[in-house]
Length: 354
Image (cartoon, rainbow, N blue to C red; front, side, top):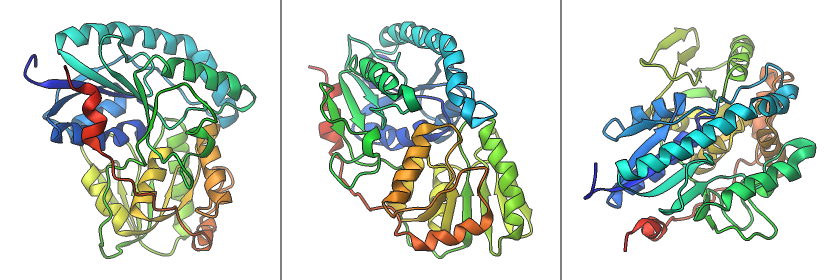
């Protein structure tokens, strides 16, 4: 893989599937612009990218071993308890990346929230929608710490608009900053298509265990009283796709990007987590939705609250949700359509060698 190819390392964090899926349009555009993406992650994020791009080189990075608490209130403390493992992984990935730069003749790096994947030797981009990292009373310190790491990168790309209306609010916008920020506009791997509606409700789950499984069990019970056709995508990446039909519900363990694109376009409303990648997909496809934020995940709770307050979409806490809540969807306007054409050529100039 040396020499002729202009190799760019693309490394999303393995935390749910959102970081990996929003890298998909970037990987596609790198290929269109004559670069060769080298994929790197761990766990389900790596499996997802391997399924999407079987022709590309993929490498394994150490896991941050992010574990979710069974109780959302304990989430922050679980993260703090796990931080030594995370620091170990970050130091390990720094060493590995140093080795890969020589081994794969890397010309640039795009890291989606992996703070150890950068180099002073080659242009390194950090992609995030969180310049402020919400953590309750400790938000100021978690944000300052995060910004300290972001500063080490050549550029920081934010998949949102700089001006209002935008999707991230205070997450992706700082009052004043010395960081080298570039607002790309929302990123989605999906395209809007004019397809006939096949499902009254699409449920798409994502995010780390055990919260994903808790929500799956809850919704399987709740949808028994739903009148209409349901598509239920569990968000479990396995080697083979499994499809089960139970009366009015079609269950899938996972879908490919193309299948998910069709499914979104064929569904009347969507029930899902309020992860930022999903927010960007819904905005692009102009789909109405209902959110159930992951318990204890401040960022998802903030996004759901903000989007409800702005009259875009309703939400409920996981413990409080009942299926009749879905009737609220029609009372909200849906997400704003924030189309921004990205000048990929200009964006990738950073990686052109002298």
